[in-house]
Length: 150
Image (cartoon, rainbow, N blue to C red; front, side, top):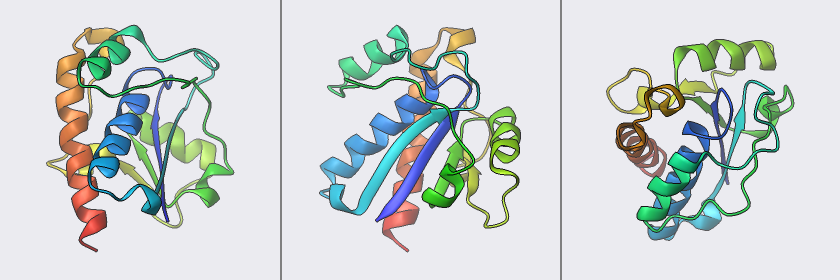
């Protein structure tokens, strides 16, 4: 079982989008029993809140449900639990390393490290959930390809 934790600042926009996009890809590939996929925040600002309406709208339009998701915060324990802890941007990576006490096992990545590199812009600020989805989809597709072709 490959355990993946997606992480962003608040766990209401990007990381839950990545969580549910990858879950959908895994399901369509018939690989659900091989993956445990979740998401979390580096901050406490949105803990307990549901997925941002923009993320929900975008995923609903694609037939991907976010039902039941509430924002949670990443903990130091998550580093031992997950095989991959995947942030959306450089600030997330810095904060994830602070929370986990470093990255001695090289488990922390940016999602677009699996594609062409770069940061996934935060639609909380841009309002552009389509662009965020495009980048997350590309990153998740590349991540899944890497993991399945190991």
